[in-house]
Length: 110
Ligand SMILES: [Ca+2]
Image (cartoon, rainbow, N blue to C red; front, side, top):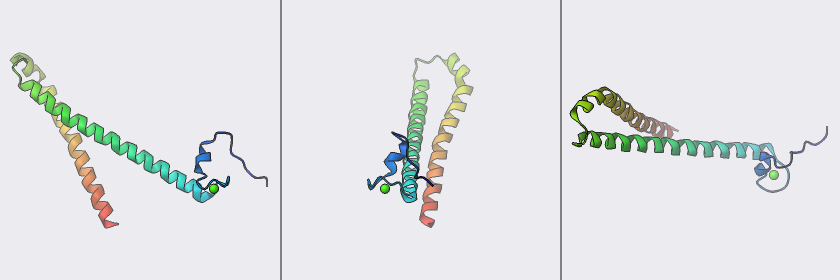
């Protein structure tokens, strides 16, 4: 059986962490784990941004509705959209907090 070689510029070249030009199964597993951790990190950053956006936008929305520049008849028209929007954004924040607490609880048990 002939030795397998990587194509030029292959993404797996980075997996050779000790630079001996041999990519072992261990190095592939390590690389896979690193990619998984990076993706998890990105996902968590994204969730944090989403929660911050929800928190800020829901606060700003309520503040703007309280200002006298919004006419009362328009406020009445917007009330159903407003209540749905506020509840869904608070739901996003609540789900984030709950899932974090759930995850933390799981980590403690390991
Ligand atoms: Ca190696």
